[in-house]
Length: 436
Image (cartoon, rainbow, N blue to C red):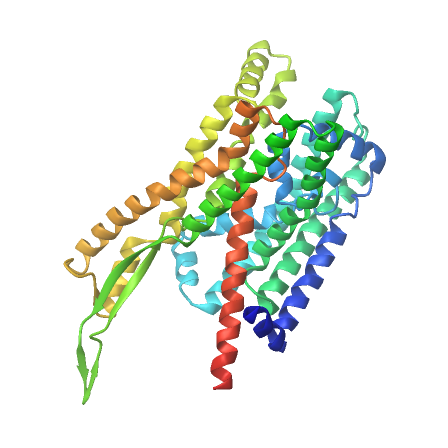
C-alpha cells in the first residue's frame, strides 16, 4: 500500500504511466485493423483452424500481439526491427567503423538506432511477403485458398499496409522509451502477450464447463496453473540471480587529494542475453517449413528430401524440441559474449585502476573473466533452453494441445515486469532525493 501511495503522489510518474497506457491502447487498436485485400471472414476462419494445435504459429503470434491470427496490419509486429537490430549488432563485430560509432556514448547509440530503422524498412517488406506467401501456401494445402489470384496492385497494397504497421509500432516503441518507463519495444511485446491471457483463461474455463466439471479436466487445468506459477518463480529467481565479482580500486594521489582505495563488485547475471537466443533459434527453426515448400517440385529427389525434412522437424515431434533446445543453448553463449566482452571489461578495469583480488590486471583478468562467464552462463543456458522447449514438451508428452502462452511468453512478461518495477522504484527514489 505504501508503494501505491508513493506512486499516486508522484505526478511525473503517473503522467508516464498514463502515457504508456495510451500508447498501448493505440497498439491494441492497430492489432484489430485488417490488411486490405482478402475477405476478413475467410481469413478468420482459416487462421482459426491453422492455429489449432500449431505451436510454431502461436510462438510467432505472441510477438505480434495476435496480429498474425487476426491478419492485421501489425502481423509482423516488431520482428523486422528486432532482426535489423541484431544484424547491426553483429556487424559491429566485423566492421571497425560501426564498432567505433557504438562506443561514442549517447550519440553513437542514436546513430545505431537510426541504422536499425533504415534496415527495418526493407526487412518489413521482405518478411511481410514471406508471411503472406506462407499463409498462401498453407491455405492452398487445406483447400481454403483465400489468397489466390492476387494482382500486383493487391500485393503492393498488402505489403505497404504491413510495412506501415511495423513502422507505426516502431514509432510507438520509441515514444515509450523516450517519454515513458523502460524499453518501449519490450513493453509492446509484453502488452501483446498479456492481451492473450483473457482468451487463454476463457478457454480453460470453457473446457471445464463443456466437460460438465469432469474431475480429470479440472485436475489438468489446475496442474497447468501450478506449473505456470512454478515457472514464474523460477524465472524471477534466474532473472534476478547474479554472481557478484569483487573489484578493488588502487589508491592514487593527485595533488593533495587521495583517490580510490574503495571496494566494489561486478554483477554477472545468470541470463545476460534475455530472450534474444530464443528469437535467434526460432528464426532458424522456420527453415524446415521453408524447405517444405520444395516438396511440390517436379524433381522427385528434391521433393522427397524436402518432405523428409518437413516431417522430421514437425513442431509436434520430439526432434524439433531437441534441435530447438540445442540451438537456444548455443545462441545463449553467443549472445552473452556479444554483450559481455571480457577483453573490453579487463581493459576498462585496468584503465580505471581496478583489479580483481588475487588476479593480475590485463591478460590474466581477461582469461579469468572468460572462464567465469562460461561457468555462470552454463546454468543460464540450460534454464533458458528448458523454458524455450517447455510448451513443445507439454504438447508432446501430456497431449494437452496448443499452449497459448508458453515459457518464452512467461519469460518476456516476467522480465519486462521486473524492469518496469525497477524503473518505478528509481523514479520514486529520485523524487525522494529531490524533496530532500
